[in-house]
Image (cartoon, rainbow, N blue to C red; front, side, top):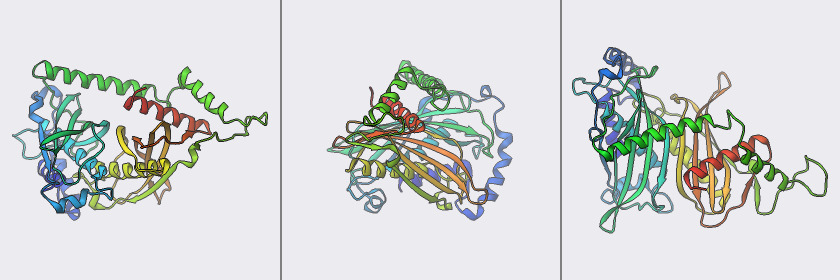
Length: 395
């Protein structure tokens, strides 16, 4: 059985969700009765250890050719969008393993993905005919949030070699997915686990600092303002004395010409156990659009370097029209930073609501054109892309 099917079947058992779309309303209504099982405070819940949430799942690409078809791309490597789906399902299962209460037949918690903090690639090639192993466990908890770290390795040349490391942040909600709910505290066992736990604390502080310094909230730094002004000066037409006459420098592309858009109709097949659209599906579609944009921009097949700071702002309902917009927002040498914005469009009210923002860092096998912003808004996208690039690749 493929890992995503195994994991999602296990999650349905834990939550008590129906496998049939026609029964989903009744199944969700039955979950309301679990409200009384929620803890009134975190102190009412027993502390857990990291080993309590340890999960190991295998993806047998080497031994199951039929399964291989689902993961294979036309370059004869593995579709990374499918890996994102598996990681998202696994992070949810790890979180439920941490909060498991043997006295309860079903979990009263609704655990969903809040943020993909980072995914760092250890190698670019994933073989389509070699078994894959996923492992992971909880590394930090707050009162209602959980950090889960996962590792993916692949069997090749007689041993399992690391492919990627991923950090997801999950949040616990009540059975109706309306309010926050408490999760079990985590007790580190020994100095090594204490170090891992402190890294989780540092990750939380870093996320708060990044949110506080967001360009949507505060002005760019002095250094960033100089970068924007330098980009502006480099595009002025020297033959005129005008702020409006702009000229594209050599080997460059205006940012407005580096976009790619897509539309998805959200069908029941892509639902999660709470009958919203599965977060892994959103990540896969956004990644594939971002990859296509990077491929088009660089003129050759790019490799993924890192996934960074995917924020899940709103759930996506079944039947929604999902609009995806990708933008190359920063380039440096062979690197291409792509931002994908997703929003739900309601054709009845004509309203647009942002659901997710995705950040991907790709590398090409050759130097790519410089991306040049023209407006102030594009300049902020450029700086935001530069910040994400520096976090993942380094300055």
